[in-house]
Length: 184
Image (cartoon, helix red, strand yellow):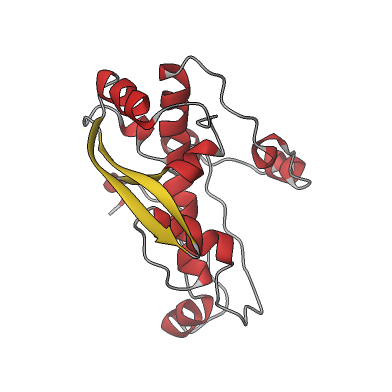
């Protein structure tokens, strides 16, 4: 996994940490730093680390998860992130929804939203820079945000073309539901 130290620094203070010390701490923490990369992003260079972790550490396979691990290894508190502190104005609406048995047993949340009138598929520069520094391709804003959210949080996000779904089922009325492996 290629991680941008600039991105990690948004979540953990790395300003006073020497690169060699960080690599040593990561190695002692069970993460193998395979390579140190100097990547040109826009008009500046950024350092990225190619890191591998053991199979039992899936919690650290995201920027957020690895940042928490680095904070612990450096004996620091993670930086407070505004977007993780904000209360969503529609949170109460989700709390009142009935949860089906399958949702209660197998996943914490499944939310479906319809996004309409997307005309510009160009990703913002800040997003492109983060993806490039992390070795991810820049494609279009939907795929880029999908990759960003997965890479930062570890949580998958899927986009579906609603018009294609309508054309396949030949109706604008349908329901999404989660099925277990036993529901074939």
